[in-house]
Amino acid sequence: MALKYAVIGSGALGGFYGGKLAHAGKEVHFLFHSDYEFVRQNGLQIDSVSGDFHLPHVNAYRSTAEMPVADVVLVCLKTTNNGLLGKMLPPLLHPGTVVVLIQNGLGVEEDVATLFPRQPIAGGMAFICSNKVGDGHIAHLDYGRLNLGLYRGDVETILQQVRADFIEAEVPTEVSADLMKARWQKLVWNIPYNGMTVVLNATTDQLMKNESTRRLLHDMMLEVIRGAGACGISIKESFADKMLEMTDGMTPYAPSMKLDYDFQRPMEIEYIYTRPVQTALRAGFDMKKTAMLEAQLRFISTR
Amino acid sequence: MALKYAVIGSGALGGFYGGKLAHAGKEVHFLFHSDYEFVRQNGLQIDSVSGDFHLPHVNAYRSTAEMPVADVVLVCLKTTNNGLLGKMLPPLLHPGTVVVLIQNGLGVEEDVATLFPRQPIAGGMAFICSNKVGDGHIAHLDYGRLNLGLYRGDVETILQQVRADFIEAEVPTEVSADLMKARWQKLVWNIPYNGMTVVLNATTDQLMKNESTRRLLHDMMLEVIRGAGACGISIKESFADKMLEMTDGMTPYAPSMKLDYDFQRPMEIEYIYTRPVQTALRAGFDMKKTAMLEAQLRFISTR
Image (cartoon, rainbow over all chains, first blue to last red; front, side):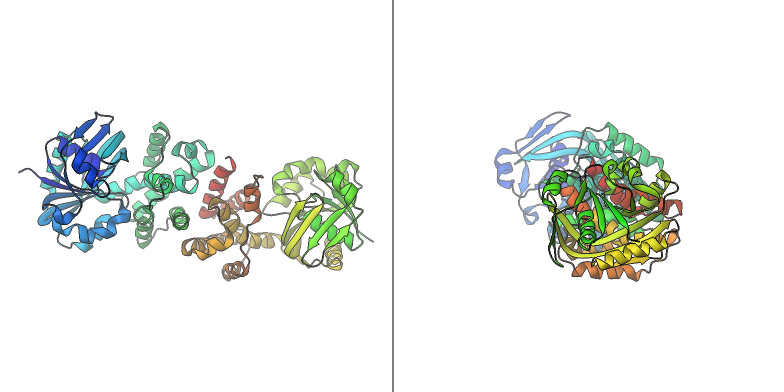
């Protein structure tokens, strides 16, 4: 059985991943916002390091009320828009629809699970460098790997099929046995780099070159690893060294929160900072540096 | 016996306190830097909330080598210039000269004591809002209290005489029984506000109005109090509440480090951050938030 996909949030992430699926012949329905009219007329253009392509005809909608029910909903919104999901998702759901939250941070599945108490839910993390560069126009600059994981429901088979569809669409995709571990692992990078680049108005390489901030980034990684540990999730301390090494190998980079800040968009403070801090604190560990960065970001976000 | 004073660093602090002593008829010799010529010709002008005054003739020098030996040296330099003291002080010292470090932070007496192993040393903290507004021109805007304390040497009597001289000069002055406690107490305010106003490019009142940063400032105060505690110095946690209250009562304020940053002068990171963090760490307490702020400031200072 072919899966029918809905993509909510067709920007840098959703436009790319949905576009790849559609390009591979899968049935994909996209929710667009500001560039709905443009995409209806001109389709979707993906400039990608792994090959450019154009989708002249896209199933584009401006409201989920107009969209067909889907088997898989890929939620690719910024988490700052998750308050909309309660109203957006219902038209897309049948009892077996898997809602896949391809989003940053911790706690997104929990919140959607509370809103939709019987819906199968999965999470996903995108390791990708892509930008929306214009109406219906996505630039995929580097990476692209997807890491999916089940949160709730008896839908391992569907998730494996999603994985197979993505692999067919040439998107390297894994299914993690432990979604929460995968989320905490991503936080080991996201927590130090996102906030520090914003607070210090710097790129990753500038922070890495300075001895003081380099040590601080490492300390914060270890703090996140200990936060995970308090929550029963074991990540080796050497993982922090790997992340430092990986970042050393990256080109100078502005993480998503830095781009949000620079373009005066809301920052994903809640799910990247507040929820991990709260979660670890409930488990008995005070992520002091992360909490401090959270407070600094909260201050900056009110500017 | 009348004390002979030398003032090293005749800016906002030294110009004011030395000026007050000279105005009260004490013998004061001032080391000037850029405004030496101006002061030789025009004297020193102090605009003060407690009364303006002009000193037409000031004992002004441009090098300590030209200055007479003093009984009391008031070091009013920014600590970022303390590297100069090894060369600057010797011409001013007789065996009983008390070097009084009226400076911010922790560790200044320790360093001067190492440089001059037999010299009597005291410390001082100035609770004052004053600025150098032009050549030979100081504006004293608010407060002014001096808190002195003995660091080393059998010179309690001299310190009491310094206090009496200042009181005669209408500068409210105390001598603390415990200099290190007084220094840590001042750090309870200095550590959170100095660095946070720089990193977040904000005034004190903006940080106090925001719920997140207000809580962070309080947390950092408690961390400093615990750092002091690890070093055997007992400060009540309620002292943090007093500091918050005091700051609420202040007019919007840029701490000295913020002014240094705004005017692209070196920041006093070493003695306000690094040394307290190191001192507490040696005593077994990790001041995590203070260390984080230190790293952020070190990064900013290299810009």
